[in-house]
Image (tube, rainbow, N blue to C red; front, side, top):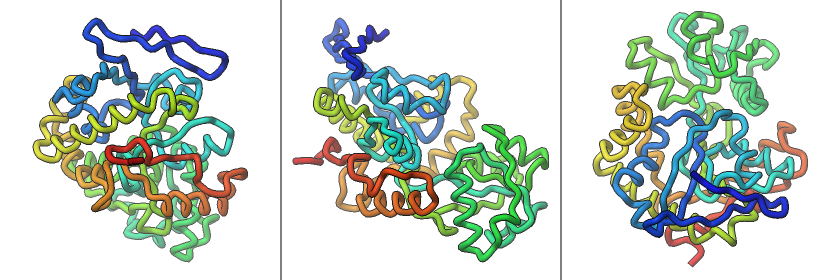
Length: 324
């Protein structure tokens, strides 16, 4: 276990070595282990972290809503979060920085079942949509409605927390916004529920990186070498995952024996292309133009007040081959 020491309010950790000389490195997931994390488990299972001199501990959060606070307090080395949440945290003064993109495209979707007859965004008029109560999900829905020339006020929203899929299946809502097309959507398809899926970036929401790796800004200079080593090992693990998905799926299933193996395999299969950077860019690349366009959208929707652009919210300097 970590012997963490908070130093003078900046959340510094005591640098501890294992008996083998590897440096301890703690990664906090955004949720329970799942196919979105397959590259991390591939890197761990194939020994890439150890080869990079890191003894990586992968943790599941006790409170998914508090992940960035753990980073801001310096209690973990890296955490997985979402581009919109990183920008909102920066706007609130939290010293968190995205150091690499784990999933390069939005996964958040509007998901419905055939009985609701939501074949496209325009069909949301007079429907009830379940969300997790997150402010940017409400803004997504408004943007999608306006793009489809639907009055946003005609769409009823219902906060169902993390119970999106149960609310949908039990007919408490006509559709949900917040589930991932590569996970909840795949799960419903495997169960032969014939889900209708509207991907938010195809319905008017600007593109963004769904999952990013986030560090404490104050730790970048001090721990930059370890973060770079982690990202390089993760790039090699993701390469192995592309060649043989079982390199990530098997250790993932060992990490959580309650996972549905069929679902994880199907989800990894459709998610694999999203782990790769644009051609000619290093693994984990974050596009400056895309980040700035998303900040502009957040400002327009009053989700941030202080940020003028995305400067400081992300860096590509620690990516494999980056900053050289």
